[in-house]
Length: 364
Image (cartoon, rainbow, N blue to C red):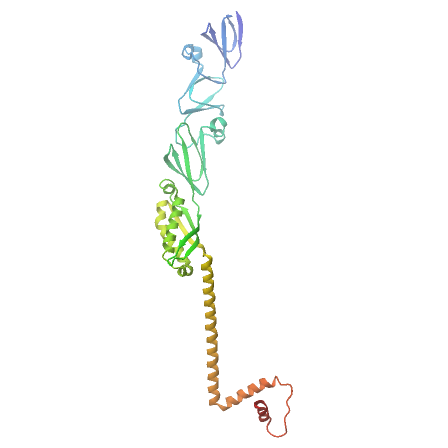
C-alpha cells in the first residue's frame, strides 16, 4: 500500500490497470502500488477526458464538475471573480465547482451585432483580439458595413467592434467634408481652333454614401470625367476672345452641367471655376501685339480729342474777342503782363503813352 495526500483545491482521479477506479478529494488516502493518480486543479478549466462518459458515472465526480460545450464559430469568455481569465475556442471542457465562481459567456462569432457588453480592454487582449474586428469613423466620416460582401447597415461617426470567425466583415468609409478636385493641364480647342491649356477646379461633397460607394465603382473618377466632358463642350462652343473675356461663364456652365449629373454619383458640386488659362507662345505674342496696338489707338484717339477740344476753345475765344474790343484789349494786357515778367529792362522815350510805346516795342 502507498499513502497519497490530496491538497486543497486539488482533485485526484485514480486509475487501476489503465481503467478509472475512483475520485480522491482533499485529504490522505491509501492506494495500491498499482494505482496511478491524475491530479487536477480546481481553479483550472480542462478539456474533457477521453473516458469522460465512464468517469461521469462516479457520482462524487459528476456532482462536483460543470461542463462547457462550445460549437464551431463560437468562443467563450471566462471570468473568475468578475475578472477576465481566459478564452476558450470550440470544444468540450469541464471545471470543478465550489472553490471559485466562474462565469462563462459563449459568443457567436458570426453575429453581426455590435459588441457593447465587453470591456474594450478585454477586446484588446491578445487572445481575444484575433476574433475581433474594430472600425473607427471620425466626426466627418460615414461608413457602410459588409458581411461576406453583403451590405448590412450604415455607420455614423464613432468606434465599432464586431466578432468575426469564418465570415469576413469589412467597412467602406467616405469623407463627408467639402473636397477640392483639380482638373490640371486640360488640352482644349476653342471654336476658332485655338489650342489652350487650362487648369480647372471643382469643389464637391458626398451627400448619399450608399450611392457613392455601392452604386458607383469610383465616384471621384466618374466626377472627374464628367467635368472634363462639360469643359470640352463649353470651350468648343466659344472663340478664344470670348473665353478670355468671360471665364466666369465657363465655371457656371460646368457647375450647372455637373449638378444635373452628380446626383447619380451621390455627390453635390458646390463650386467650379477656371484657375489658369495657358496660351501657346505664338498666340501669346500675337495677343501682346494686339494689346499694344489697341492701347496705341486709344492713346491717339485721346490726343486727337484733346487737340480738337483745344482748337474749339481757341475758336470760341477768337469769336468773342472779335465781337468785343474791350475783351480784346484785356487779353492784350494779359499777354503783356506775362511778357513783362520775363523782361529785365525796358527803355522808353518821352513822347507818347506808355502803353502805346510798349505795344510798338512788342509788335516791332
